[in-house]
Image (cartoon, rainbow, N blue to C red):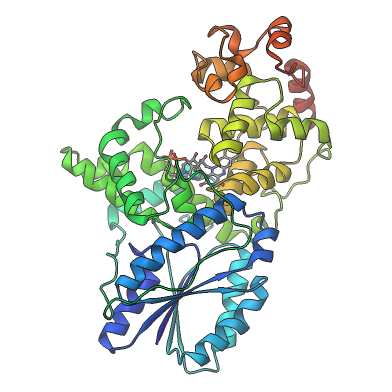
Length: 467
Ligand code: FAD
């Protein structure tokens, strides 16, 4: 039997481990089985959000049916933590006479250690272990002319783009049926999984691919102009699917090429597209995590010590977490996160800057809260985003760059449309006062006073970050 161990790659499309396992099985008239191993304690340690687990659970249910149609059996196994997995997989391999184990590589340190332990555990069995490059658009390690790992995005990106011009990455089709259809019987239930707004988010891979297609055809062209305005549906909102792997990053890029070609654009325009650049940021943060182990350990990317310790202010932190800071745009953003499990990128930058700079709170606390609530919680991108915001990261925002929540609000949510959606108590305010209501308006609308004085907090942050 060929065994595919699914992890962050819950899809049929462009899934190297599944594709090549099936190909091998068809050639050798073998069976294919797929396992997914739930590890609740590990998830808890990694702050995985219950809603993201809910999306994973429902995605697995759909995937199991699709696999059954292709004659591929599926089994959900459960362990406590990663350290239990090698023994469980070894026992599974022996019991089912597995001759090939296939999985797609994951980048964070714990995951890499887990995979090495699995390889060691099955090494005495007569099993071929195949670990495939997945999860990024470009997998080769991009190095400078001097052979050094890049620490800055722009030169890395130039190199990354060049690799796309040299050769487009391959995208694999879904596997062919390996036998006649099976009946899927096992119930799929992940402990700690919670409901996740099924009215917004998709658990069926076919629908996810259709969403991608719609974005590339209808919105990619206007992406650059609209992507910074949270009230507009200007971005793709595919991040939850990339995070759990019900969509591949290579597929996203290929879909963009296809729709650009349909619109008569050249390949170079798709490669240089602003949206491709955003997908590149995702690749870049993975590249950093792969090359700098200390990122997986929750350390600052920059190794120089900070001049001062982060502040501890549980009240301010709680106000930020619950969307009650008294800064309408910050509160709207945090409530979007709490209500939908997702937040617009411009707002992630704003709330993170507010947290690390204006409140001087440790970015790790913000990173953790995001992971606990995001549906698209992704270790590498989340860590990258937080370290960028706190100026502790590689190629981060300069330490003196501190977003002013009110002027940012006036600029990116001019009429207060987004604020009104998530802070409805302010919906009666006009488009001028909604960004910073007066004390009387706050009192009348039962909306809190600002938890900080912006000018004072800004100065405090400058003193804090100045080395
Ligand atoms: P689009 O604008 O349509 O972009 C397409 C895809 O490109 C995204 O789905 C994402 O995979 C990738 N992408 C876009 N911008 C970035 C970026 N700045 N960094 C990395 N990848 C990017 N993204 C996550 O997927 N998971 C996280 O946990 C996460 N945490 C973040 C925390 C902070 C503090 C910040 C500032 C950013 C974070 N991001 C994270 C990046 C970004 O905000 C989201 O990827 C984006 O908002 C997702 O929306 P979208 O799918 O509509 O993106």
